[in-house]
Amino acid sequence: MAVVEVINIKGEKVSEVELADSIFNVAPKKSVLHEVVRMQLADKRSGTAAVKRRSDVKGSTAKLFRQKGTGRARRGDIKSPLMRGGGVVFGPDPRSYALKVHKKVKRLALKMALSSKLADNMIIVLDGFALDQIKTKAVVSVMETLKLDKPLIVTDDKNEKLELSSKNIPGVKVLRAEGLNVYDILNHKNLVLLAPSIKHIEGRLAA
Image 1 (cartoon, rainbow, N blue to C red):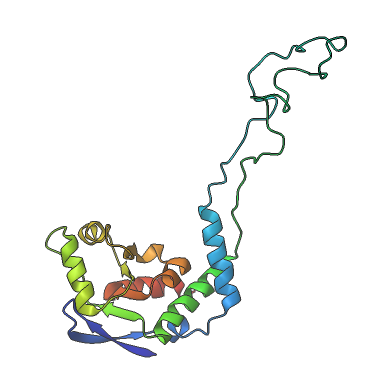
Image 2: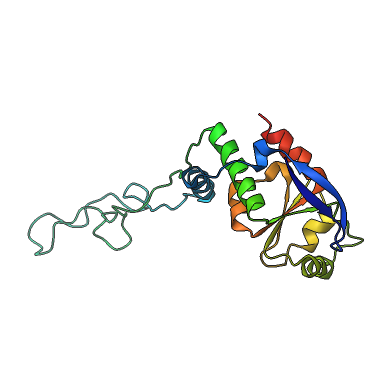
């Protein structure tokens, strides 16, 4: 098992914690990580783009003018795609971009993402992140002290003061352990784990 230092928000060592090899020491595979990240990004797409077809446009279905004798093109009704304001022929329809990935593959990818952060020494374990009040400046001060770059902060439970204080800081995101995902881990440089959240993560990925 890997042993990692647990520090406080001042950067002082408080204790040590062991990280399970079954979760934090898994050889990463680009294909697995790519598959899961692609699924996550696809699921974010709304797929609501749509156009009005001929049958969706409001208007009379009467023929605009007689077939012969006018010297004009043989028009149908006013809803024809050839007419201004008529229906659209090859426009988009609502669709789902969702991709299916097996639950075991998702779990494996999450282990690989965590392992890659540990291998790169990008995991910081904090004993806690308590704030007296909602204040962005307090979070920025901690980031500067710990030299954090674009951190993903993982909490074990709801921490409203931390979540609201870091909301307007570019590159900073606070997630609860149950919401931890591959894309956010890879998208942020530093992974900051509050010590109690490690048990939640290991419990979630134990199977």
